[in-house]
Image (cartoon, rainbow, N blue to C red; front, side, top):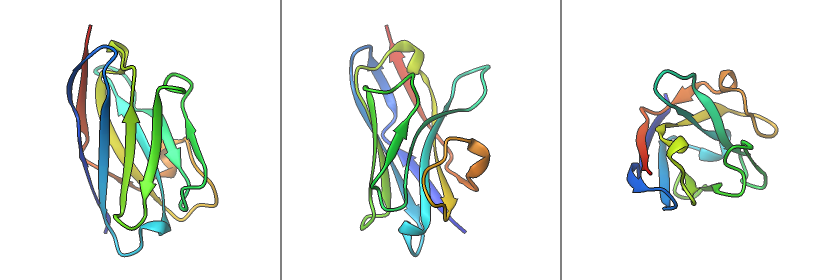
Length: 125
């Protein structure tokens, strides 16, 4: 069983920054490809960013490219999402996800088999 716990959400003004963390309770963190998704009220959960098991490659959605960055610390079993230049449309619940194995990174939420409880990010205008 994989337990993912997100933290770092909150209320921020437009243009501000937040860093989300997701701590994984696993034996070998490098077993898992990691991703971040978000879900705004009334909308489907959407892909935000993903990172390979080793951390050597990342990919972000076009809507956040250049503003958000995903990284991981395989010693601390933690994945991060650095969010800069936040916009009101970034307001959502942000979820951390883990996929067992994987040869690269994955943008489809169906590829992930473990999910955190989510952390709320609210960006005021």
